[in-house]
Structures are given as structure tokens and as C-alpha cells.
Image (cartoon, rainbow, N blue to C red):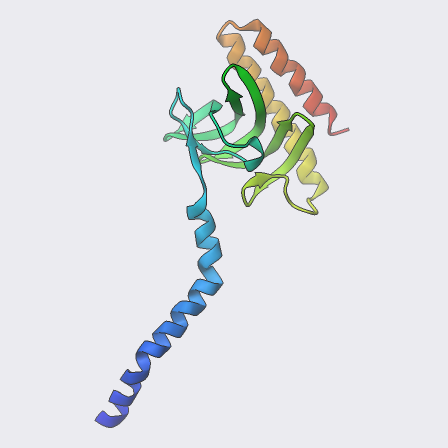
Length: 173
């Protein structure tokens, strides 16, 4: 290879690198950006971190469940609160602070399914089995919340979440 040929290819190197970089960003940018764009929240008391489903809206959110390595894990509940007033709640399974599957209990009904994008059950055509599994996991999460309130000697809240578990289970029929 001659020195002229080598230097000619070096001149094209910045253009080639620029094209490769743009192609990589177009192909992989949104996926990488989505993970970085997630809004992490923190329980004000336990300091456990999590990503709340968008349908919970923003504001103080509390986690009742396991907190492993500082992140919400396993079955439990994320509850939005406005002062003393309880807001919407997510009942389901978390993994390393990110919702996996469950149900958001809203004033006008339930959103059920897998976590996708930034919310639960937002898929246009979700798998019916995912919806059934979401309600079953949510019912188990509500029972665990009830057990937590029993341990804290709060029978009123324990009863409320046990009844909610039954309601969630009925949604699978």
C-alpha cells in the first residue's frame, strides 16, 4: 500500500466515524435514553428508591414492601399521598426499583398489566394472561400490605387491604 493511498483513506476517516456514530445513535439512542430518562423517586421515610408508574401522578409516594440494596423489590404497594388523603396506588411486583407487573388502583378503575415505557398496562393490545397474572400478583401484594399493618397493630388498614385483595382476585374471573 502506498503512502498516498493510506493518507487518502485517513481523510475519509472522520466522515466514516461520523456516519457510524449517527447510525449508532439512531439505532440505539432511544433505548439507552429511555433508561436514563426514568424518574427515580424515594420513599420519604424508608428512603427506598423506585420508579413510580406514570398513572400514579407526581407527588409524595410511599413504598410498603421489601427494600433490597436501597431499591423496592418483590411484591408490595406504592401509594401516592396528598397530605392525609390517599391517592392512587400500585399493587404488584418490583425488581430493582422498577415495576414489573401489577395493577394501578385509580379512582375510576384499574390499569393492569406489565410495566412498559413509563406505566402499567399501557399496551394497546396486552396479553390476556398478563392481565390475569397482574391481578393475581396485585392481590398477593395487597395481602402482604395487610400483613404489614397487622404487624403494626393497625387492624383498620389491615382489613381494608385484605378486602382489596379479594376485590383484585375477583377481577380474574
